[in-house]
Length: 114
Length: 115
Image 1 (cartoon, helix red, strand yellow):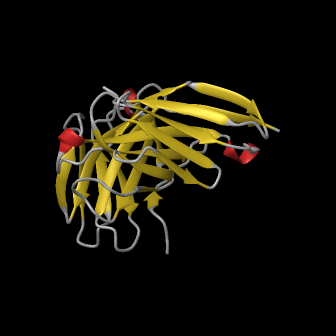
Image 2: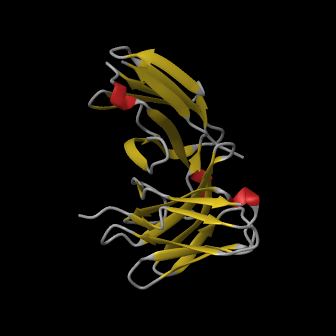
């Protein structure tokens, strides 16, 4: 079963607005990553946040991690039409040890309207 | 530096046939992972190879297999294709394996349609 669950499944906003996506997971993790996927293309890594970090920034992206609630959020500020894509979270469970296997959510589909 | 290259990008097969997909990782990357992506199931982990050895495997039937060559290039094979195997197959490479601490670099994927 999927470890990560993104919320909402779909989001439609106007250019210039902020977009917030959430990811919940079930077990303790080493880190959590966010990826973007343009339609039918490969995934592109956006940001990684470790379990001992609470917030991380990269350009217009802000990621928070709340390990007590087992959740993370991705905020895209001042959105652009080019941000239209699906966004996925991926977690690295601590119980995996050296049996590395990322667990993926089903993604949030973001549409930014010009 | 060239990215991850997957071939072919698109292919159409019929039920019962078999297919081989290829992935060339970023130069210097020794770990290659394969994923199946479908609208209903999202990204499902198939397997990971490191130094020509399968290190990890997902919950897929034995019809799905793979291998890695000494130059880190990897292939995956699906035999006796079923309609449900229609999907985007993604390959990802990374520098290290073990307790994961870094990012994955994905190829553009191979879109398989089974008729």
